[in-house]
Image (cartoon, rainbow, N blue to C red; front, side, top):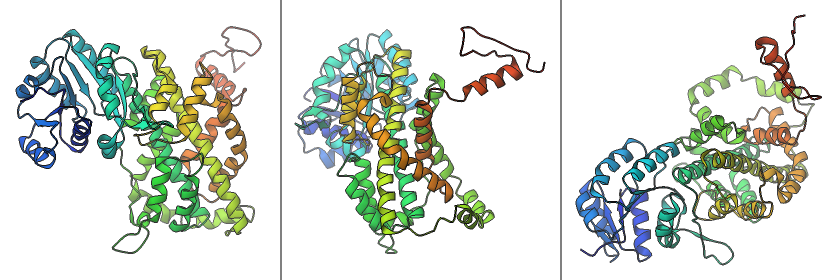
Length: 484
């Protein structure tokens, strides 16, 4: 058997597609799956590619790789990764490189990196974004490892990654940082993805429940929005979803899908890390909570009956606002919605990048925000035209603490603010929940306000717990006897 450039363990859809991607880029790839039948089926389906070979034992895999060996694990995150490392590492030697391409928790990756370093081996925690299609045709890759390991992997990773930029040739991969940095960045990518998706769902809700638009009408709006600053993969697929009909009923496909959303945990991890590091990520976290709320389907059905008369009461209390909108009013509301979605998106990304900045300082990663936003421009789920402007903003304003300080985005936020308020207020009047849009608005208003309301919180804490407070007119900590 010819010595392969890289080994790949795990032939579920993501692993199989990544192996094909490697082979399609003329990288000799040796695949292995714990179940031999799956390996055999893979080779029957794709073995005509001369760059694909199969191994049927771990020993065979290791023996037939070029040194230093490079092995990608595309297996389920969690205990399975540790079990695989326990089996694999005794067969390896100093200098070999093991890559975890799954959605592992970054602290697990840090622990595994330290363990393999003691054995003289390199461990790479690599975020892989783009789903099945990205794995096959070019994902966004986020490797966390030593620079020594990255230099050895870079040509291969650049070859299989998505490409972006005006030339269409800029690889969507860069060195992220040491140990768990790659998986952390992928985790936050997914947190931003949760927020981006929920913002779109909120806008869809207003279009449907407030403006009364049919799916076909909404699809045309989303198609038009995809031509401007909102151009992105998620906006594109939203338009496509709204065009689809259900073959069984003839109804719009979106109307026959149950409103219960699942999650795999990376959004929750993002919010947990934000709480631990003391970073405000309300829009990301509300998006996680929205999925949690969606699971309460039976309770929601029951409560709709309990409060069945509430819509009429809300309508009566809404300053006699008429239920129907004129075409001119609809057009204005859609323009407000477009600007609102863009502004809220800026805030969601600002929260994500702010979390990355704090994590970088905490864990000593030296994350480069302009480079991270560049590798998200293609291949991943949040790929968007918008990310060019994000990258430019971080590059031009060195040391920028938060995306809200961007000169470029500040103008868009100022332009959107009035309409944003109208959108959220109208949703509240009509009893329509838009948790992501409203939390992003509160985030923006709180962040841009020099004097907030935490003075009351300080006073309360000192009143009931003698926790002290600070003053606006002199330094130090103070306490008073509030009951005197």
